[in-house]
Length: 305
Ligand SMILES: [Fe+2]
Image (cartoon, rainbow, N blue to C red):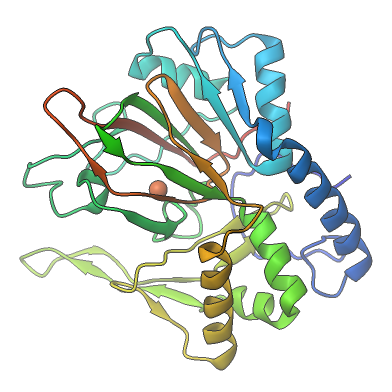
């Protein structure tokens, strides 16, 4: 079976035995068969009940790992109250130790996603009640700092709306490759996607331009995806094949695909995943119901053991 280990870095490592090597159709077909079968078997039972989030039992951990191994994600639900520290402890049971903190994260490196009027956050969509388009987290990070896993934990629900959709990037890879392998070749180009530099008001560069592929394979053979459906602050390589790849990808994500996972997270529920594609519907808060979701991003992939 294809080996899914925890990764520590990310390079274009298309070894001949990799199912992601476009020249290895036999291995790809074996991988695809297993992946699709396992995904469809598990997709309606992604939720795992966890009694104590900070200290999941061996059986709870095994249930979560099985789902992550085959679908890159697991939903969880707990009835006990959950602190931010509990989320970090929960993550550590799956080898998630290094948070990708950013200037908008709180001191512990975890972000509190809620509607905010603060000057620092109000321009960023996650801190509004607007919809967030399909993306993977950290698509603007450099290749040595890929966000390989995330946890989203719902602490409070909005009055209405705020549902999420998730799409396993490995399934998306398969759907694109089966349409035309050249779409994958184009999306693996190291200059497929470029994020322009960011400057502050004094014209100081805060982040340099970042170029990279959409799909890449780590040294441990795991598939990673960088993507955003945003059209602002992103430049795609000007090629017919990239254009076709993006149109196909967009159509798949918009479709009523049997592979799409929809979830309304209730307080005490969350998702742990290998940074699969996700989006969020807009929502409406009220005096008594104000959405709060904790987000933790890690550089490690969910461990298999
Ligand atoms: Fe996200």
